[in-house]
Every structure is written in structure tokens, then in C-alpha cells.
Amino acid sequence: MLKAFGYAAQQSTRRLEPFHFERAEAGAGEIEIEVLFCGVCHSDIHQVKDEWSNTVYPCVPGHEVVGRVRKLGSGAARHRVGDLVGVGCMMDSCRQCAPCKAGEQNYCEGPNSWLATYNGPMVPAEKAPGERNVYGRDNTFGGYSDVLVVPEDFALKIPAGLRPEVAAPILCAGATTYSPLKHWGVKAGQRVGVIGFGGLGDMAAKLAKAMGAQVTIFTRTEAKLAEAKRLGVDAVLGSDLKALAALKASFDLLLSTVPERHDVNPFIPLLKRDCTLVIVGALEPMAPVNQQEVAFHRKSVTGSLIASLAETQEVLDFCAEHRIGPDVQIIGIDEIDEAYDKVERGEVRFRYVIDLASLKAQRE
Ligand SMILES: [Zn+2]
Ligand SMILES: [Zn+2]
Image (tube, rainbow, N blue to C red; front, side):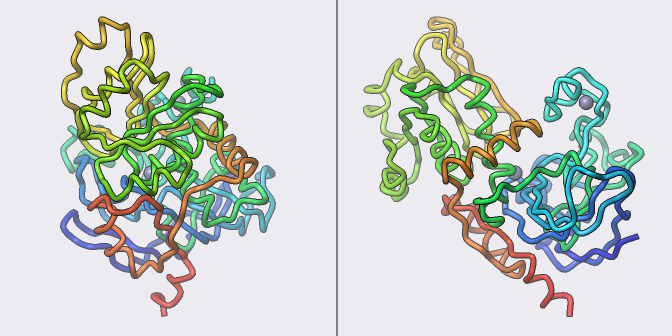
């Protein structure tokens, strides 16, 4: 076994604290990664606080992981020792089901769905606590730690020209927003609206703009209007009903990146006929959709979950090629509580990224 060190939540009510644990050594087709940077995602906070009622403790969060390959398991040949690689939300999937065979691991229909990089295997929230982790695999521990072991095909290549700390949030926030932009075929000249301007909204706007779309950001926070305009996109206060009315039937795609339950009904009239609003931020029951508005113009309100491995590699390469990426703020692991508080209050548009070198001081 490998000795590992990271930060974990021991209970939903506790803050993250130093945690020593063990990982299995890299087996056949697996690689061992020295973790360099890990992004802080809003999901980490939901999971640590058991807000989806499925957290297995101890919980070591972190699914925006960039590190250096340190060791190859037998037969692993996709990466070389010393390569920079990234691991996102998934670290394995069933590999047998139709979506997996089609390369859409993020929609795996296997009995445990895909294996989450932390708090895996994913099991339904309605399971009683004692039943949660009886699926033949142990809990998984994520990237708020010094070492990670994953199947080599679930590690993406970090392209030259993308700094590792900037690449980290692309693995979740970038992938999650790139996938629907691609799936719904955003083209140059189209109008794309991004609802919510946090870490996901920031990436959605930058990616859509790089695809040539005309982008509008909708935010609840007046102070963020100027920041949005600095990205070279339009910005509208989401609560400004007059401004929304003026945008009626003008958008080809709307992406809602708000990370919790919210009402999308005020935005549906903004879609053109036959167009789609995709919810990528929230994973809980939402306010009912006004079916009249949807039916009368054959609109769709739907969801999208992270991205396939191929799309995740694509968005990393796309960001390197177009020289875009999240605005990041590097923190030490000991600053994580403060970072969580700020993300929860919706104060930050940039992504916090943990420099795992800060773990060393904690270990001694
Ligand atoms: Zn995430
Ligand atoms: Zn599958």
C-alpha cells in the first residue's frame, strides 16, 4: 500500500482537517500521480456537507487534479513518467454499457454508474447510511492529497502551453460547460446566454466566445456586471425583468450554471423557437417549468453532466489553442475553510486552486 496524506472531512458538520490514509499501489494499466494542484469546485462543498445525502466519510474532496506521473503499473503505456496529467470527476466506469462503449463514460449505465474520483462509488441518495458502500469497492479519495492512483485512460494529457494550475479547473468547470456547447452545436454568430457567473459561468462564457458566439451573462450580483463586460461579453442583471423582456426570443442556447436549486422560468422566454436551456450547475429538484412557455414554442429544458473523456481532452486542447482558461487564485491547503466560505457566499468568479506543495508543511 501507498502512504497518502491529505485533507478530509470526518463528518458533515466538521471542517476539513489533516488526514493520513493508504491507497492501493498502481495495478495493471494504472498510474501513480504526484498531485501538484487541485481546483476547488462547488461540488466539493456540497459533498463535504452531505448536501446530496450520499457522502461517505471520511471524505477527501478534489476532482480537478493536475499532477506528474510518478510510476507506471504493469502494461501502462499511455503516459510516461514525468508527464503532466489531469484527472477530472471520473476515475473509472463500467466500460461495458452502451454509453461507455460509445465513449460517453459520463452517462455510464453500469450498476454503480461511473466511479467518482472522490466519494465513489456513487450510490443513490435514498440508500440508508449502512448500505452505502457495499458495492465491492472502497470509498475513493480525491485530489486534496499528495498522491492519486487511477486507470491510465482516465488521466488526460495536459497540453504544453497550459499552466498546470490553470488546467486544473478546466477538468470539471471547463468540461462541464464545453460538453453542452458542443452537444448543442454552438456555432459562430449564434447567441448564447450564461446564467450565473461563478467558476462554471466564467468558463462557459469564455468557451462560447472562443467558439465565435455572441455571449450574454446573467448574474444576480450587480458588482459582477463590470467583470463580465471585461470579458468582452454582454451582461444583464438576472432580476431586471425589463431587460429580460427586451431579449425575448433571441437566444440559440441558454446554459444555467447556478450551483443550487433555482427558477429558470424567467429565462425560458429568451430562447428562440426550438431552442434549449441546459442546466449544468444544479443537481437537485428544481422549480416546475412553465409548460405553456415550453410547448408554445417547442423549447427544451434539459440537463448535462460533466463531459466524456474525449470531450475533456478536447476542452483542455481547445483552451491551450485559444489561450483561454479560468482565472485562478492559488491557495495553501490551510486556507481551504476561508475559500469554501467565499465560494458559498457566491463572492468569487475565479477558481481557487490548492497548491499541494502546502501539504508538506502540514505533514511535518
Ligand atoms: Zn466539480
Ligand atoms: Zn458504463
